[in-house]
Length: 192
Image (cartoon, rainbow, N blue to C red; front, top):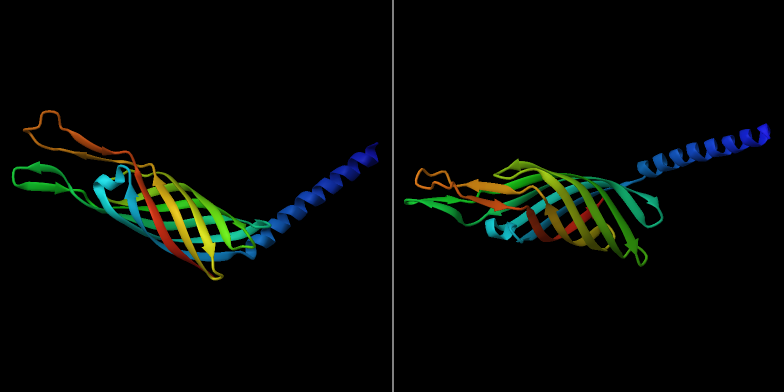
């Protein structure tokens, strides 16, 4: 009985160490992806922004057949549009807002690596503008052309923004609040 337990433990130990080595080797054989996109702000973001653009870099490796996982770092910028407060002849306009997304990234390939669906999940750190850092999510769908892919995605950053009307004549000090920054994006991605 003792020999059987030792044999089972040895096999399990070998399997665990082999799996770890296998994942490490796969990670070393991964690929870099660089992408750029443009987007249309949605929901509350469309009230304070007219356009969105961004770029990102990811390192992904194939964990199992057709499934790539890894990490992503990027930059996304919402261009401010419109006026949120008038004080006399002065206008207070929405400022541009930018975020640095840091996320785990994954994608699954269909139809012999022609189409893929993916998801980036992480945090969007506010880099500039009147916004808060928040949860970052980006589901995406792509068409693989080899070293180039075409991508459509929905980007969501939960960090909202508050624009307070600082005016002595305004006893309520009204606040214009955005619940988050969402956009629908189209872009390209290059694989290295």
